[in-house]
Length: 193
Image (tube, rainbow, N blue to C red; front, side):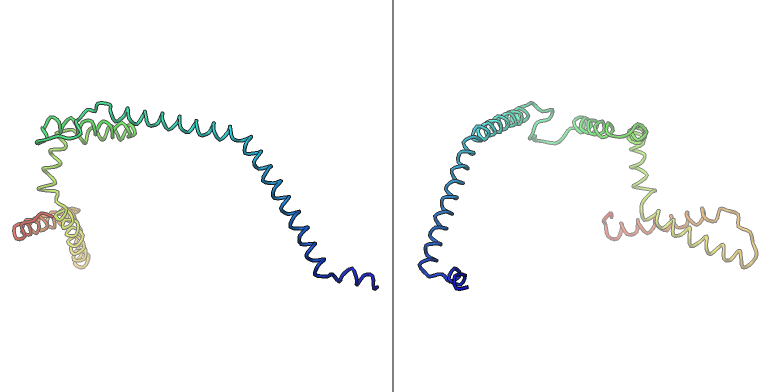
């Protein structure tokens, strides 16, 4: 037993020697690892150089493409002075419409071509500034609901039959009220909504 206890008990000099041996062993392992890593990096160096040259070549080709796009002549000048002429405005509008319509499906494209003809656009613009104003349409819808409801309740109470034109008449009455309200508002405030 005494021999086992002697093995377990160590002296400070013994501990110092063990630490020194472990430190030297550890430093040798680190040195070996660094040498191996250096050898591996030398083997991979051509790969890094190859990757660097490939990246530079690709960057140069991208920049050449970018410069060629910038120096290419454009259809319209970048800066202009003076007012835009009607012909230029129409040409730009036509180009934009063709580009947008090319991205649509066939039925949508056909509908777009019909809607965007000059006659339909002019008619639409005239109607939206006079007859089909948002306030007038909203007032017409509300008027149709309220008037139809009132006539229905009265007819049911007194036993009359409805003819079917009550909703249309209610819409027209509401629409006229909406138009009058809109025009009075514009006359008083002087602003369009």
